[in-house]
Image (cartoon, rainbow, N blue to C red; front, side):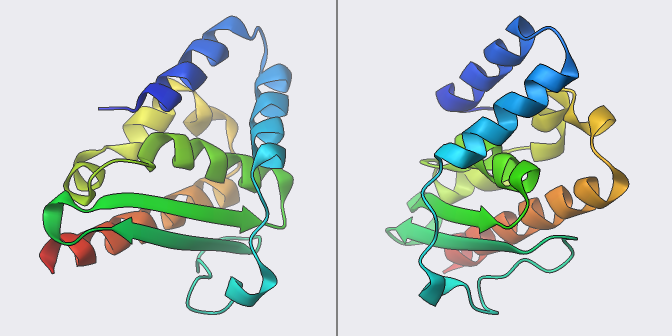
Length: 142
């Protein structure tokens, strides 16, 4: 269950021939994301478990399971900023109930990222997914 934006990334990855090009594409996606305001880079938005600095700022429209999930994010590491952009494509605009149904690690596996990220980056990716799922779960239960 992936968004159209995520499917476009899958298609692009199939077109790109090697991992250097794919990494470059992920980094470019991160560079294209708007930066977070310094005022929201606080402990409440920081993702623990990442080797680099990562902040995720949710914006949820509505209440309950039908609320629509949006988020912004930033990192001080370019590849991680790109991973945030990939997660944004995967989750942004879904209802919080749909967010909870997404198997993010399987979807990221479609990109082959599981095989090409360091252990630290993989742990950070899992931490970001867990934070997104926690935020969505809290809203769905409300």
